[in-house]
Length: 429
Image 1 (cartoon, rainbow, N blue to C red):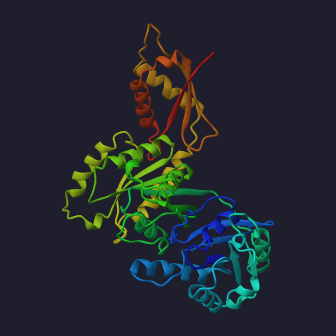
Image 2: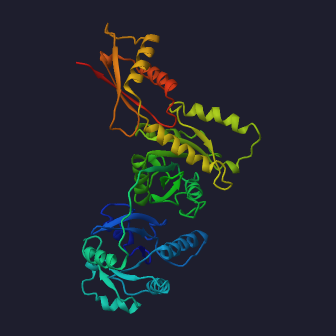
Image 3: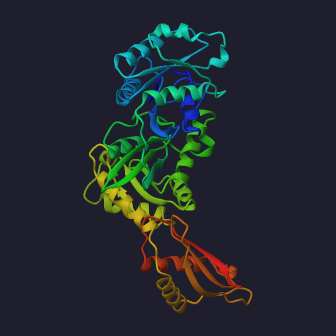
């Protein structure tokens, strides 16, 4: 079902209340939603896909035209269209245009008279002059009329159950205007997100599902992350929070860096956030087609970038172009490879053989006349990334450099490319 209407009639609020969670950004500022956002909704045992679209209005420039085309595509793909209007505002010409376009599609159409709490005297019959027979009065903020709307929707949609399957969640993250939406579209092989030269185009987290080698992958295009001092209050603040939340919800993050603007400290900070969250990481140099280069440029830049990201030496580096398609499909191979590595289960006997060899080669030094002893190691079974418990005595006296040594020796045995790993040192009593 696609929710359509002019700007600021409460489409995103309605979208969120149907889902039962804040999926899209809601603000008084008209035109907050730009991309079409899709999510799975359920009611009375049935499932359906719900699409929130931008406000429909005249296309004054190419950027606005792209938004409007996306609305039309979302409505064309929907089995049902929910035309949303504002109860406390008389019918406008834009409302009439939205209604005409919806009825012209010959799809089932429901009229949603939202913000009914602001105008209790408003009659649904007044709004039915738009030509839509089925109408429901709602208030997304007060959560009234929602059950009636869902009953109406479910009565007009074919019964369905959307199957859940193992899905790799991948987020495209980075600073504003580094090409996240362009790469997102290239990966999705369709114009799913709006692409423009202006920074900050993406606000909500835009998601799409694809299949690669029989594996389901959900891609999330996020808003650009700025330095904290440069984040404006309001919509942009929430956009950045959504981007940071997307990291937490991901299995793997693609950190995009503009090939024309490398060695930016904020890129390193974002990589640190991914590492701390325990997520997989791929360093992606985007817009590679726009760089003047020769046969040696790649080999010159790679060591420089690796040096800047020495704290994540396990993260693969790849140079891409959404325009030419260079290395776009290779990203999928890396994603699947990293996902499998993150779920690798290592036998306890093999782990303890490794620990004995590492300790014998370089015994841990102690502090305060206390020598740490490392006895045995086990892998944590309930984690979705590599976590290991090392039991011993006086482990709190282990120097940070020794912990780094253990990780280096571990990766010589099991490279675990693309993912951080975690050692927990536990006193054996």
